[in-house]
Image (cartoon, rainbow, N blue to C red; front, side, top):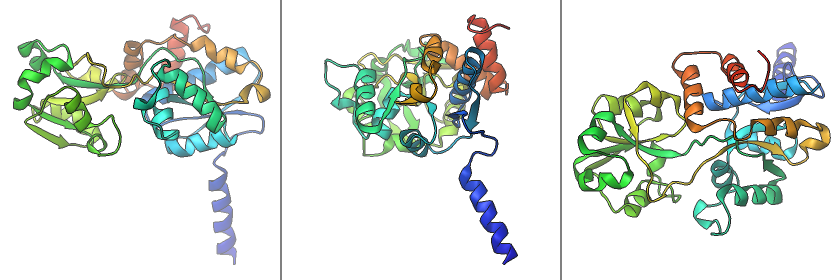
Length: 297
């Protein structure tokens, strides 16, 4: 009986998921990548600097679960991307966006209508898909755009994460090669964490990265321009519940101070400091805010 009681207490504590959260705290859901870690601390520091609110950082959880927690009002916000919200959470294809609307505008309107959540103004950085090659290959063939690969694609090996080869979705390998009218010598799936190392070791020639990936700065990699605009632009922005201002007046105005404050190159460098230099995300976030004169040193 005592053993069952102990197990029940452990279960209840684990379900609460808020070990140090105090009632009234604003809850930010953290993520499992450096970009989310740094942005989470930026938001926390800004809110606690400019308001009297306390912020609790909820440890990372699955993206869909995080979305559901914000949608239900159980938690308040997280970092996301307009394309991720549209495709992953709202189950819409970016190809369906009306020509007179941007991805961000279409996504934000739909999110408020369907899920009672919204995106604040973009931070300025993107984490979009980018085709990449080694610096050596780019120099040899003067590669600057994805279209530049076409004359030599039949001699090159393309490799990317398993999900990029799924049949579902428009932003995948087959649609990419059809869109650019090219075929590679081989197309292989590889663990997402091994792509850049594989490229560097000459086991493959072309891969897929994300534009804000800090690991890109660790390797001699050239990111090619998507000259025909195949990949949607995934802008980073805070995803919040639509009624956040009701419970935390003034918070949105504080977070808007971060809008358009971070370029993609800056984001990639911040992520590099966390992923490669193993710096504390809170320290990286604070240093950036001081550098941008958003807080005092």
